[in-house]
Image (cartoon, rainbow, N blue to C red; front, side, top):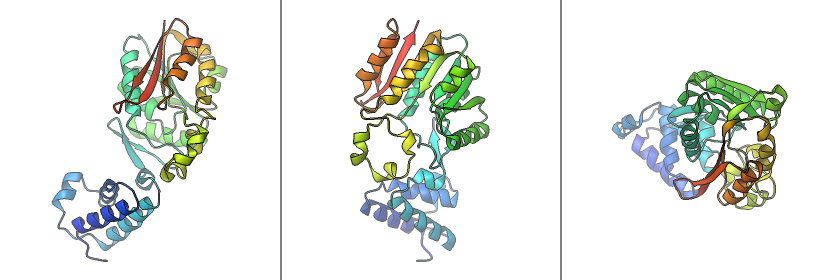
Length: 283
């Protein structure tokens, strides 16, 4: 099928993706990727004929997306908090809900004089890099157990001009051995219970890194380990902020209250009304 017009290509992609239960918007994302056009230019080119090479590559990638490969892994990028981050199969794809964790940390950190922050389980680096860029005087460190994820994060930091010190290790272990202290600890750890595997979509389960998804029978294993470590690195006054899965608010709040009995601990819902953030302000 050569000589396809832009609107015809989008119609084909929309129909093909819908027939495989995927969002038709993926077609637009992939056509923008292959043409290098802005969205406004795409609309103005609706009657234009696509190059044969572009049409062929577009068909290939729409087919790949319809088979379950996340579109972000096809394009290699995802937007987060207004910036473009490189992503790949070694890291979790950034979710819009995590922007609400950023907003919470920015709000809570505003009361601190000098910010020394550590992001645990940094993945592609979105949290550490965004907070460093939004808080220009902050000293930011980030930890991940995956060497390949850290390489993605380092590349993103360099590309976006962030100053983040990266550490390889399990949770806060590399920080504990250094003796360094922080007044902000933030994490979006794995929190999916093992039992949820059977109900997860294939494009997540088959493509995103398992290490970044699952955390034991109830999804709380990482929170338990992390909360036990935090008192050894947290300066007071300080802030702890976690992203959580829906329905985990009470359990994670209880963990933090048990460790910091005098802290103000709260659960926040996201824009969809689901439990998303638990934070503790430790005085």
